[in-house]
Amino acid sequence: MKNNDYGNKITEEDLWRDELQIDSPDPDEYPSLYNISSAFIFQFQAVPKLVNSPEYVYVPERLYTSRQWTEIDVFISKWNISWESGQARHALFEKEVPEKLEWLKQFKDHNVYLIPKLRDRQYYAYLPIYHMLPPRILRYYGLPLLKGGNWPHSLRSPLIERNLPKDFDNRVSRAFATYIWPLLNSQSQISAYSSNDSIKLLAHNLDYWMPYVNIVIEKRLQQYGRVEYDNQKQERLIKGVQRQAPKDISICRPLMGGYIWEGEEDAWQVAKELVDMADNQGKLRSVIDAIKSNRVEDDFSLKWSYEREDFERKLYKKRSKFRVKFVELPDTLPVQGPETEVENDLFWEDFVALLDHKERQVIILIRNGATKVGEISRILGYANHSPVSKALKKIRTKLQDYEKKSQ
Image (cartoon, rainbow, N blue to C red; front, side, top):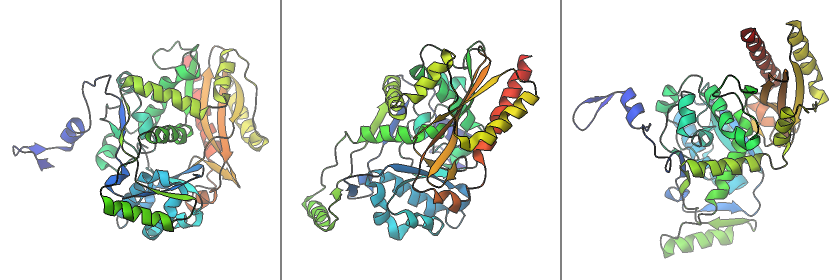
């Protein structure tokens, strides 16, 4: 607690309400996401002429010990602010890697993004998604109207972490599904405002969208151009560094910052770009269209045959009247975390589970893709936790709860 200019006590509730939230947002200005140029910290960025495909890694909160909390927080901030350096970040920050993140040095040729993994409330992972949502949807799901977000997130905010709803992840997941659904299938509705909607959402993992929304953001920022040299001395310095750099690296002034999107219309355009980026082969939209026309076909790896049989056996043991269809969404971008199952160079993660109560069926989508840093899951203790099996168990429980309430 501290005093304001008039000597009055300021509580955390005051700060949360007055400093971080907005009461009556202007639709031309809200929601918004902005970027602060890395030129405020760095004189230049080392930009590979060919940036490797991104690999996202959750950094577990247990690594944020009291002794290294600030060191890790600052390092991840600087690492992510230098996103356009891609795999070249390893050379830039090799001497600054905290002891708890030493494993990063084993993956020097890879374009790794680092995301704080909190015990709950994954605000930093889903920050761009959250700040894409309009007020009507945020209010419906009981989410605060936070002021404009900064991408990539800089330092962690304990004030935000403490005051977001405990079930923040679930609320944002459902809110974003409602927001994005018309772009996936405009001819049907997903459960949000009406109990009569034909399709209900049982589960929705936002990790699927996270890499793609970041790609959309980066493409937008790359249109801004670069910050000019401060003076001739700086220009000579940077050109001197370029002469010593490898041929496949360009030494550039950082990109300019600014609003990435501002207002509901701009945010909706970003949502369109996101769907096009994340579903460029149309697989996801085809599945949803097939649900609508009752043409969904099983398309599931033999790897999960036991889990599927176990799911169906336990479901039908409870005399469920729903048929179950399993579909894989291939070639998605990897996110290494406790909900990802990795085997050799492949990963699997639950994505979405939809209940079509009109046709009495449940469609479960599991996403997969290739990873070149699968060993990180073992190093961080994410391996051997059977996350896909656990996700299927949660989906089955939600379906059974729904059936009980519908009786």
